[in-house]
Structure formats: C-alpha cells, structure tokens
Image (cartoon, rainbow, N blue to C red):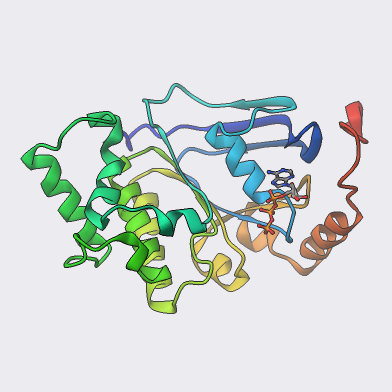
Length: 252
Ligand SMILES: Nc1ncnc2c1ncn2[C@@H]1O[C@H](COP(=O)(O)OP(=O)(O)OP(=O)(O)O)[C@@H](O)[C@H]1O
C-alpha cells in the first residue's frame, strides 16, 4: 500500500473553467498529506470543477496544480452519480473488478487472488450475494456501495469523491463515511464534496470553502462559521458566469 508517504497537493493561483469562462479563479491552497477535506460551498460554487481539475479532466486556464510523483492511477476520482452509471450493462462483480484496471489492463483476465480481492471489496461494502446482479437493477444506495468497492480496489493515495452521499439512505451514508474514515486512518489524502453541513461538522476535520474563489481553508470549526458561510453565499450570487477570462485578472 502506498499510504505510508502520502502526497501533498498545492493549488497555485489556479483558474479552471469551461470554454475560457472561469468557474473558479485565483485559488491558492495547500492540502497537507493525509488530510481529510470536505469541499463545501453553495450550488455552482465550483466544487465539482475543482475535483475535475485535480483528476486531470480539466486543464487549468491559469495557474498550476502541483502534485508529487504518483503511481499510475494514483488519483482515484468518483464523479457524481449519473444515469450512465446505472445503465451500463455489467454485473456488480465485473464493475467492481474494474478497480483493478491498473494491474490487469483493459483486456486482462483475473487471477484467483485478484478474484478474491474483488470478493473482499464487495463484502467490505456489504454487497455479498449481489455479485451476479446487473448494476441497472441496484438501488441508488447499492450502486453507490458498488462504486466504493471499485475505489477500494484502486488503492490510490489520493481519493476524490463528488457528492458521495447525495440521495442515499442514512444507513448507507453511515457505512460509506466509515470507509472514508478508514482511508483517512490509512494516511490517504481524501477530498470529498459534501452538501450536508451536519455531516461536514461531524466527520471532516478540514474544510475548503469555495464560492468561485477560495473563501477559507482550514480546520472545520474555523471555516464553517456563520460569517464565512454568508460570505460564500454572497460571493457566489455576485459572480458573473459570463465574465471573460478573469475580471480580477492579475490583481490576485
Ligand atoms: N461542462 C460544463 N460546461 C460549461 N459550464 C459548466 C460545466 N460544468 C460546470 N459548469 C459551470 O461551472 C460553474 C461551477 O459548476 P460546478 O459544477 O463546479 O459547481 P458545484 O459547486 O459543484 O455545484 P453543485 O453544488 O450545484 O453541484 C457553474 O456555473 C456551472 O454552470
């Protein structure tokens, strides 16, 4: 496991966006190795965009994301659930086994030991007995468990989760939080977009509050204050989606 020397992420004056319209701009922050970070902010604040940038799905319009040398597949990224996840014609076993792609490649077969690891991951998310089920027949909570099992096998030092608890029953949330805390205890760096403030305060020691720019980053008790949350709402509402490349440009 590469959890012993977990990496540090550094955002340097980072601007990310779509078709040159910035969605987040001039963000600078350092994520310490092994941090468990809740990424919070109003709707449209840029939370998903930040995770996409880190996952390498969006190239910065400006600034940099500094990452240490990572093994192949060193960042595990779980986007928000979408219809596509459900409609993919594959069994729970095969979907979870995709977490081993880094080891086996796209067309490799599974060894007996690897099959065993897939079974263990399925068991860890309490889905034993569902191996042969098509994922299209799973409930939302069960599908999310299967997605977490796939992440477990990916064994990545950096884990990015976009709204993993959205529209999920309380029991499943509790089990998934448990897995996240376990990853944290193993020394992995975990960034999770979370909407429920109660969950943030209960489980996440560190918070990154976004509203198209960085509002605050630090211990949850110091970030999740009424004043900073109000500031985030205000900034988000005032942001002009059609602004050209950067209205605060080089002022930052
Ligand atoms: N693929 C895209 N193309 C163009 N604009 C996009 C795209 N994805 C997001 N945006 C825009 O970027 C901004 C930030 O969106 P983002 O999804 O990152 O916010 P968020 O904080 O994750 O929101 P939510 O909490 O509602 O999921 C929004 O104005 C959004 O409309």
